[in-house]
Image (tube, rainbow, N blue to C red):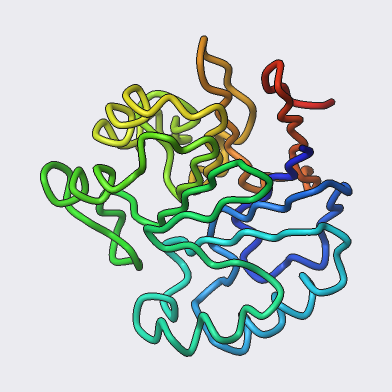
Length: 211
């Protein structure tokens, strides 16, 4: 299974070069300010892509998915939208969640601690591919100010669930691929000079990023 990972396109999706693959995963911030019209434009773009399946979650810029969830979902006709829920494709369970620790006054913010930990507790133990908007603490979360913006409670849950792949974005300057012994982490956010999705191959023998 070839998975193409993108995130944080912020309404500029048409500028992206999206490699072919079986499944396209978008880890949030598909709009810049959460307008429904921007979701419609994004969905039209998705409809031009060849991937058999497309999975999308919201991010902190995507206000409409929090304020008008039904109307926003209805505008994604070419993708499966996940908000604290899972979908199984060819025997592989994908779970998506848009939350992140409080970040200015954006969408899908929760305080660190019990409130956000309760969301991560919903991640099924048999998740193969985890998609969140924000990163776990210490992995792909270093800001240009030198702060670690990731969530400790998300990291704790990932260490329990041990998904083969964790896709996220949010912290643009930390975009990249990060390996641990059990999980491949992809911060798929756009960054200056980079507008190509990250390709990951998932096979019975393991998982690897493709150059």
